[in-house]
Image (tube, rainbow, N blue to C red):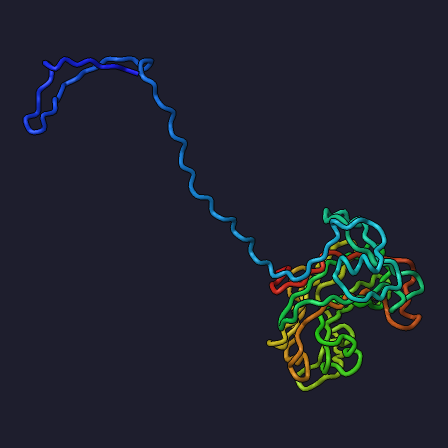
Length: 301
């Protein structure tokens, strides 16, 4: 604190206000003055966090946080949120056989001498009904795989799934694709466009469509492949991408007889071969799967 004594003779009185005005000069050092600490800076108001962008995913199943080992029916229901499970051979969570850094994956066992419903498994998952969905799955075939004649792959469906085995496009439709090979030396696997015709027919037709379309995409042993499909009821189309590249498109499809069905489920199906001994697995083998995704937005492209 500094005290200043001023002689009145050194000041002049203001005639209007009566106050004395003084000319004061001081000399001091900084140690003579107590300087108050600076006021802290005023922080700008904190904005609320921005919500993450909507991805469009309505289902995303991977196995990174699932303990390794065989999956029981109850395990499958909990992981996938499924209904009933039809399972004839072991389905398990295992290490990624490609060691690609994706963590745990799902394996489906195909025992020697078995095919069809006795090999692999099947279950369904319900999703909110919409006119358009994308569905993708990652598939790995190990090197040295002894290719089957064909096997079924999972896909979107609508209505009553069982009806696709009877009167197509009346009560239900499904887009369950297939892997196919010629079972000869050096054979490889491609994709069927419709996969046993399990998709409602062209406009005005409700019978199975048996036309099979080869893709340029191939199931290459020793590599993960992402297979993505899109069903669009309004546009009457179905499309397929292999590793993000366009592979197949079909138009002019009437998905239901009364145009009253929605895409409302995923048919998870992992059968090996067909229904006769000629389709049986020739040795014990496995397919591997990861990242089952259903989305309202494109997934791999």
